[in-house]
Image 1 (tube, rainbow, N blue to C red):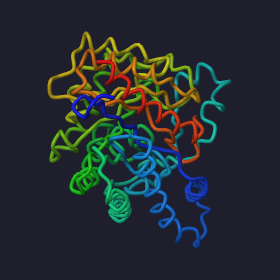
Image 2 (image 1 turned 180 degrees about the vertical axis):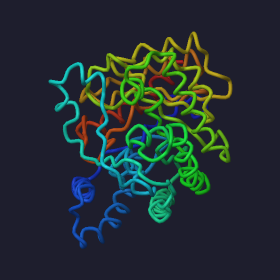
Image 3 (image 1 turned 120 degrees about the horizontal axis):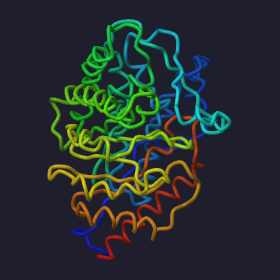
Length: 377
């Protein structure tokens, strides 16, 4: 086994399967049917579950860990922490599923969330929820020694992707308002001593969702605006305390309308976060390690390629994981990469493409694959 100086670190993209009782209560709350008694005990359930999932990550061998996002309904949690979202929901449309409508129900099976539109001024109102989230994680980490601890947070562009704007005069104004409001959350996470993971599916998934119909140059123009808002929101946080997760949508769809990584990579490099986390294992994007031979990773960046597919119940062989890791390490250098997953294993509480036990087995394969990759060189 390679020693600590040559070890390849491992992490994941954020969400992990919630205990069944907790997932059920989060869905019940999302649909407005949570009883007062269950509402009162929900915080205790979350706190206990966070302690367990933190230990489970460390026992699995993961190096850079988090709270599994166990207390959140999913990627749309921010509507609970921002004012101004009281409008009628606008469903997100995905161009690849529109081409194959017969698989839409299967691709999105189990997804439960509400997506209210913005109808008023945006302010950050979730300080109590955020303080509870950070306190739970701080308590869970106490007495352990992970290589790093991160907290995922919705980027301004992610919020704009899921929650339509019916208030601000244009999308840029909407993004800027979101950036200024979410700055409160980002800075609080950093102040608590954790790395901020900015979840940015808008920077890739947006091409076949929010901006379906635009060509690549037009999409790039939109991306520049999104990244400018993102950079503004984290202007007071050191780049070393930031990582950015970019994905094309964590669902079992055809993904044939995904924008190519080569067409956006230079813009992704212009974002402030030092670490860039991308999908790199699934059948649509597994070949894009070659992009980094052409568009070299800047010297001040760290790459976190996904080497585990989070939308299939196949458990990757550790040798395949090691092969994927070695490709990236050979290009960017092992000292500038961390092995990760394509996306989360439970981006919404009830939306599980991968069965929970298999998700943990896949993370075990990630750890073993990283060990084998380090031992080979």
